[in-house]
Image (cartoon, rainbow, N blue to C red; front, side, top):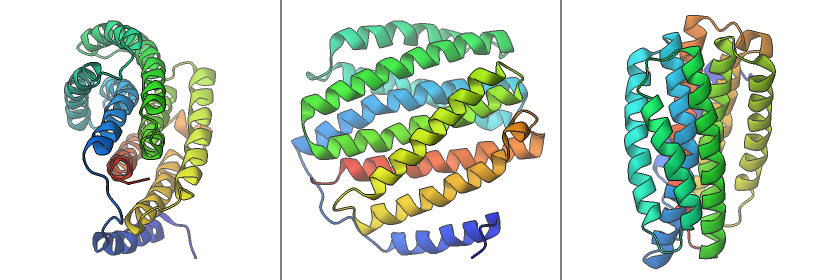
Length: 268
């Protein structure tokens, strides 16, 4: 079968139609669900850090400006809400929370500065620090809660962050920034994304809905790869291709947002 973007889109449509008629198998309620959702909120801080840097880079280069402005505003609002929710949870390690709050106050202010290359470097450095601390926060919460579904929720949620880091790195290359650093960052994120996708596909008791959404995600990351092209292509993305990169990346994020919610609701 051809792996062309058109055929990939058709496969996504067929899978989506099947998934729409399928319900999750076993769901959790009460405390276990609330705990998994806290892990989701903590994990979302990883993604939102990278998402803010990605949107800032898009704005600086004039790629889907209206969309990028909306993404930036919504990401800042969502980060604020998620941080408050996690901070107020008894299991949250407050030492890490304080580190996140310190970096977040700086990133939130910088994100309002008119986008330029020098400002983006500072935005990205803070985003990376936030991602690292949010990763530590999520790992500690997952261990403290001690439920298997929390680990799958965290792993699926981390895919959201990696999707944003890949796009941000591609836009960094497009902007002519440190090519070695951003190329390495992209390659590492891509390898980690593929490994985690395989692990999630092997999770016992995946519902038919989760299995189909994972298949859709596998196809969607292929469409994202096609939009990116080769490494040399990334450094000289034309406006139409940059738009395609942004849009295929958004759909990939949407899929893993759905999957993370679905894993949070699985009883295991």
